[in-house]
Length: 155
Ligand SMILES: [Fe+2]
Image (cartoon, rainbow, N blue to C red; front, side):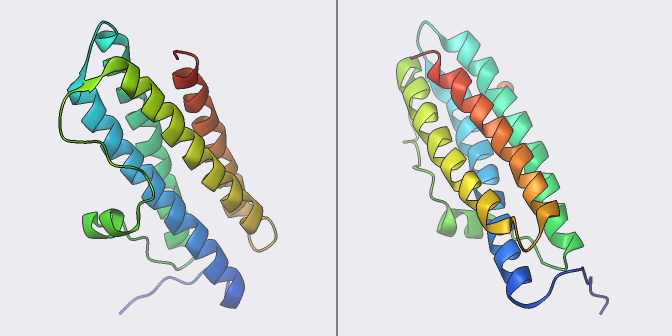
C-alpha cells in the first residue's frame, strides 16, 4: 500500500499530529454546532444570527480542510469521522431544541473563546517542531479570534 511520508518523524511528528488532530476536531464540531444553531435559533435577532452562523460554518469548514490536508502532507491520517468527533470534542453540545437568540450569542462567545485558547496552545507547541503547521494554526487562530469578537460584540 502506498503511504505518504513527510519531513517530520518521531516526537516532533507526534506533537504536530496531536495539535492538528485537536484543531480538526474543534473545527469540525464548530461547524456542526453552528449549523445546529443556524437552524434552531429563534427571537428578534433570528435573521442576523442565522446568517452569521453560516459565515462561521464557511470559515471553519475551509480551515478544517486545510488542517486535515496539512496532516496528510506530514504522513499523518486525519480522523474526521463522526464517532471520533463525538468522542473527542471539548465543545459543549447544545440541546436539540429551539435556542433563544441571546443564548446563541452567549454560547458562541464562550465556545469560541475556549476554541481560541486551545488554538493558541497548538500554536505554541508547534513552534519548534514545525513552523509550517504553526503558520496554518496561526491563521486559524486569527479567524477564531475574529469570530469570537463578532459574537461577543452582540452581548
Ligand atoms: Fe441554511
